[in-house]
Image (cartoon, rainbow, N blue to C red; front, side, top):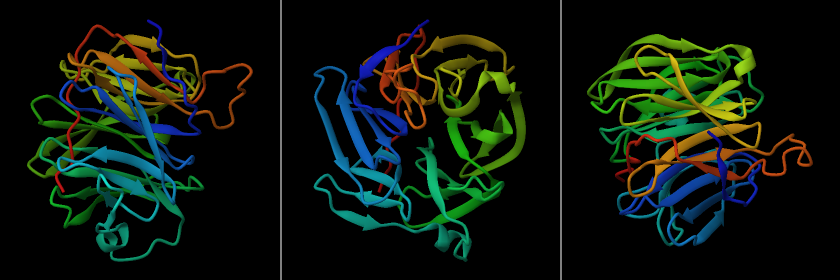
Amino acid sequence: MKAVVFDDRRNVLGEGPSATGLGNELITWVDITGRKVRTRDMGTGKITEYETAEDVSFAIPRKSGGEVIGTTNGPLLRDADGTLHMLPTREDADGFKTTQKVRWNDAKVSPLGDLILGTMPYDFTPNGGALYQLRGDGNHMRRLFGDVTISNGLGWTVNESKMFYVDTPLQRVDVFDVEGHEIRNRRTLVNFPEDMGSPDGISVDSNDNLWIAFWNGSAIRCFDGKSGELLDEVICPAPLITSCVFGGENLDQLIITSASENTDLMQFPEAGMLFIASPGVRGQKTELFGA
């Protein structure tokens, strides 16, 4: 299966797609180092974008309108009119100010409404990041665990009992048991060979299978959420594939983000664009943030 271009605006580091609206038609994503939040309507083709003052690693739509955005020194609540509101920070959660320059990376809202968000050091210092939980009311941030290098893909099973997680340099997907607002019993679901590329963002479908983006892998690959068996593959016309989300009225369209940084654009002219594919399965709805 091959993906085709969905939005031809080139992103330096496209990431974090979501699908919202009555028909899951509004696709929102970020260009992290390009400092932009962008949207495209699957039905009308209407596009929007706005710039941020810092690198922005995620922009997740809120129930009340606007987004929660992961700027380097955020996160922040952004109202529909552009007004920004501070939220608890990493320093509040950790009790100390990090000596390394880090930024937020991937984030998603859990089925219970918690924002799960992770960090990574700009210089890729091993174990320099962590994973955090911001409660849905926006009032409390805590560190779930540290010793993370590039906090990346997140997803949950349909029955909400398990959470999947990627720390990219480990070349694997881990799974946790979910008990209320707690995660426990971390173990590895599947390890990936180096020649497959590096695992990045995740989208979990309605069968609890994982659709995983592979940086330097030119593909989204689907793995069985129980056995880790490789089930399917979506080939993309760019090497740096970063994440994906199911969108459309039936949640059966896979929207895929990519990056163009350090890529030969003569060889890969569509690098950094968004792609779309029809994988023949249905996904899960994007969870909105409550604050």
